[in-house]
Amino acid sequence: MKNSKNVLFIVFIMMQIYTANAQQLPAISLWSEGAPGTKPDGGEEIARIYKPTGDHVISNVHNPSITPYIPSGENATGIAIVIAPGGGHREIWIDHEGYNVAKRLYENGIAAFVLKYRLAKDTNSTYTVEGHSVKDMLRAIKLVRSHASEWNIDPDKIGVIGFSAGGEVAALADMYEDSGSSDANDPVETFSSKPNFQALIYPGSINKIVLSGKSSPAFILGGFHDREGISKGMAELYSKFKELNIPVELHIYANAGHGFGIRPGDKGASSKWPEALIAWLYDVNKISGD
Image 1: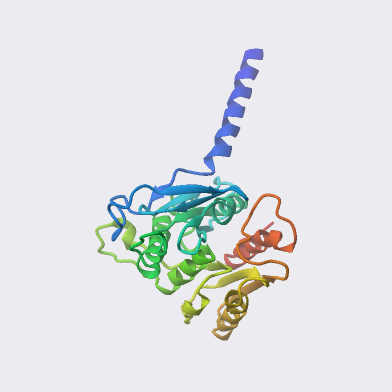
Image 2: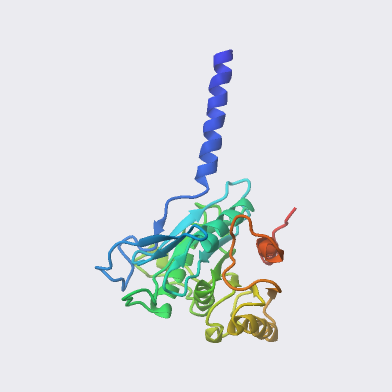
C-alpha cells in the first residue's frame, strides 16, 4: 500500500511539473516554407540581454513566429490575443512586453501568442512596417484562427495587443485586415485576419491610425509622461473612436512614461494595468469574471 501511495505521489508531482511547463509551447513559424519576401541570407536571430533590467532583446528576425501560451480546458475563456512587443522597429523587447504579458493573460484563461515580427528599422533591414511587420501580424491572426478548435479558442474572440512600435503594428493590422480567400492553396490563408478587438499600449505612430466604421473595439493605455505625440495622441485617438461610436476604453496613468510593460516588482498605479486590460477583455468578449 505504501508503494502505491509513493507511485501516486510521484505521478501527481510529475503532472504538476508538466502543467507548469505546458503553459508555453514551442514557437511556431508563421509560414512553414518561409515568410514571403523574407531576406534569404539574413543570418540567425540575435538575442542580447539588457543588463539594467535583465530583459531579453531580439533582433535580426527573418523567420517570424508565435510562441503560444494556451490555458487548460477548464480554465480557458475562449479568448485569444496576439502580442506584438515594442522596440522601435529595430528590435523586440520580448520579456516585459511579450512573455510576461502572455503569462498574466494565460493565468486568467486567455490564450496568448507572442509574435516575433520582421523589423523595418533593424540594421541593414530590407523590410517595411506595412509590407512585412503588419503582414506578419495578419498571418499570426489567421494561424491562430486556423487552430481555434484545437486550442479551445472561439474564432470570434481573437484580438491583438501591441506595445509602442508593436502598438502601431496591431492598429495597422486592424486597418489592413482581409477576409481570407476560399480558394487559397495555403489552408491558413482561407481564414480571416480581422481582429475582433485591439489593445494599443502607448502605441507609436498614432497619426498613421485611420479609423472607419469597421474598426474593432479598442483598449488604449499609456502614461502622462510619455512623448507628447503619444500621450496627447492617445486621448485624441479615443475621441475618434467615440465619434464613430466604436466601443473604446482609455487609461492614462499620471506617474507613468513610456515602455513600462510588466516587470517583477513593479509598483504604483500603472503596475495594475493588466487587471484593467483583463477586465476589459472579459467585458468586450462577454465573459463573466466570476
